[in-house]
Length: 136
Image (cartoon, rainbow, N blue to C red; front, side, top):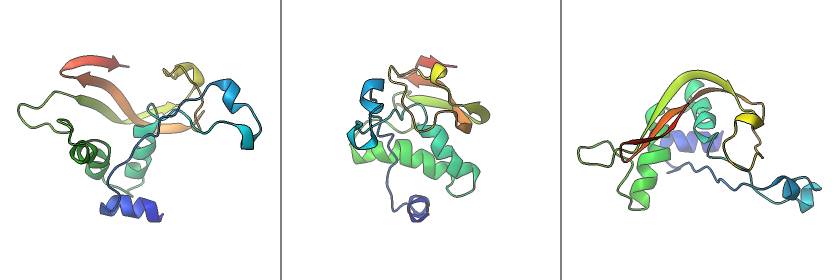
């Protein structure tokens, strides 16, 4: 709860996916021998939106922590919608219900702690430099 409050207050600057896919053979071992890591890119937004839907973190704070602040911290020409900026945009349906299933995971690795998790909200389109690169 302290981490959620620190995020809401801006004490935690950014949220990252820590996307570290592992193949099945490196995960299906005794816990102490299994490789660390899981996919995170496909569930990061939806997991963060749980904080928004539960009124713990504002939507603008989540967007800042997942886009605007990381770009500023790393000196990237990204994370903004100001005129002249690259049109890197994600269209989000805040209310779309969905369930994480192995069959729907796009990543080559399928290991996720969110298998069969129910989420509300997801990215429905992604544009990079104004070009559509992902659509549901």
